[in-house]
Image (cartoon, rainbow, N blue to C red; front, side):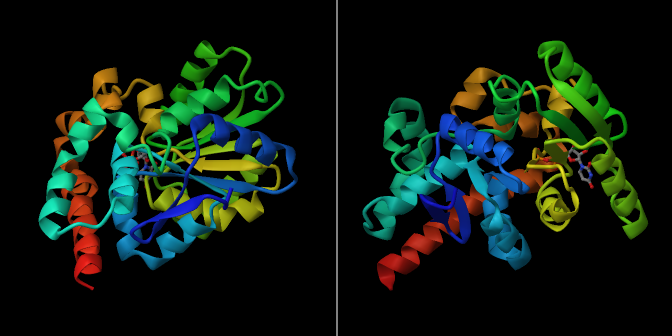
Amino acid sequence: MKNGRIKILQASVDAVTQKEALENIRLFLSSSDGHQIVTLNSEMVVACEEDAQFRSVVEAADLIVADGMGVVCASSFLKKKRNSPFFDMANLVLMPFYEIFSPEKIKDVLPEKISGIDLIHAICTSDFIHDKKIYLLGAEEGIARRAGEALKVRYPQLKIVGAESGIRKVFSRKDNDELIAKVNASSPDILFVALGAPRQEKWIYDNLPKLSCVKVAMGVGGSFDIIAGKISRAPKIFQMHGMEWLWRLLQEPKRVRRIYNATFKLAWLIFRERKDKIEG
Ligand code: UDP
């Protein structure tokens, strides 16, 4: 899905709706190659500024969806007519209010937010899933297995063929080779990887060619933790208004630095990029 790909700072993202993303996934599953899906959130946009390797891994992905209102707002803001830095700053500050009162104003570039966890559920309820096998890799001991069980309760038709924790599993080459052999032995079509960004994206990029049956591999961040019930997802009102970061901060205060990167640092980088363009 490299048509319609846009840039947010140095990161790339595809302007697709969830429905279009699912159509792409259907095509990926019917082809003979492996495909990588990236769910790009605000923190990853900042990471792309600082990590050239991560940036090229994201760019190489077959589908990159906008995982968060921060990414959707950023794309819209960067497209708006360039005014003075003062008006730009005012516009940036107003973004969350546009989001609440006039959401169509910020969906002029990226049509919607597609969270990794929503995409998992959408895949699990799609009409192409019935004969596909799913493998869950990542998260702390037992969480992937619990997430698999929870998915199975919710979607009894699902074929979950394996679940493996992610902590320390892929550090040594031997561990990694064993893991690849294990995944290959259950020949999944879809692999969800929860190793946290950017590790999960880099891991998929490096290992997808060795995973002979996998047609779709997607980094899913903390989704297994939520599906397994280890942490709770932000209430709908937080999700709708791009405030999931606040919910996560309340649940896990030690994420404060990461949340700062995903909010204030991203806003500052975007403002600076526009200011340079106005003055340049
Ligand atoms: N994780 C892992 N191995 C690692 C780092 C993280 O299995 O080396 C798991 C972690 O337990 C969590 C998931 O990766 O289940 C996502 O972590 P994080 O909260 O950083 O992701 P986010 O949702 O913020 O993208």
